[in-house]
Image 1: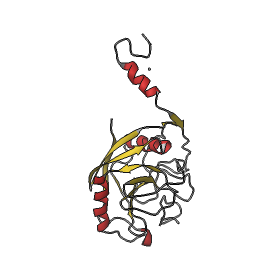
Image 2: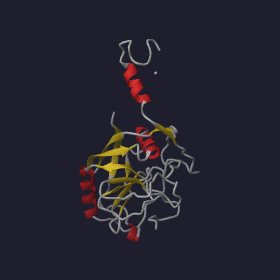
Image 3: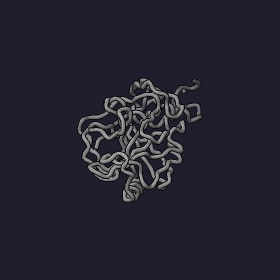
Image 4: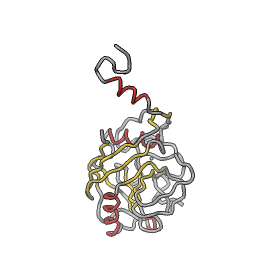
Length: 228
């Protein structure tokens, strides 16, 4: 089942010549280039969703790093916390998230929904704050079929079509029994989970019934910054 107020909403249920490249000229640049060359990549497709982006952004590069962890710092009205993105598990999703963050897409946005029945998540990533907005393109579903969603999980929301991820993501603040239908692309640190739990204690406006609603204590994201 889906949690969305309308069919168009994105939801979740209840994503370098010289002396050669070895740097022997003393510049040290070759080592960095070799390190970059050693990172495996994968090809991603980000087709248009037929809608105007909620905030003007360029689509990500279609070649995505397929290994490593990307750390992201989030500043918000509920405090500062960190995300660790898993590029091996979900390279196309992480590639998109990093691209959007670097373009300021998530800056000065509000988290539009929190749930407290059956699943326990805070959903963010829509600059319109309505649950209807996206970046103008979609991301393919990246699942293995054995995904679980314990507290601290960072995953992508989507509409009915499995390959309809965009910019909206959810952060799990208590173990949630979702089926393996949502791309897990990282984790939320303990500080972030605890902050969301406090927001959840204040409840929501019930605008989506059993599917939750806007947090009674608004959650505003000031900035999302990819660590160097």
